[in-house]
Length: 127
Image 1 (cartoon, helix red, strand yellow):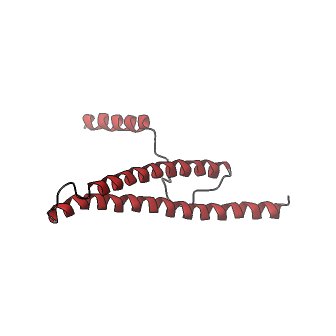
Image 2: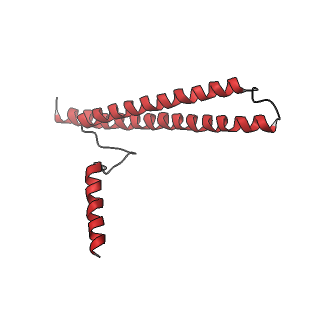
Image 3: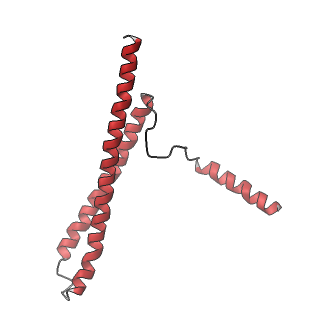
């Protein structure tokens, strides 16, 4: 493969990675919006039932079904996160830089953070 072909291949991988990131962000956002709107619906229904002065039995099956659907959306979000992490491993393998979203600066491990906190605490005692 010539250098020009390698460059084109490299550039195309970056373009495809950006397209994947756009679709992934849309998908994750859609799941989040579904969870939020479903939660609002479930939260609204008991009050609506009370406002309509109907028995607590009315609509309970519907609430049960909506709560079950929220559990499924939550599971879908978990699986989407797994897929996101899998794509990130692929991104790293192909050395594609991070394009958007996520933590750009790695979060230190908890042990490092607690050591920093302990140092700050010791310094404040000295003052």
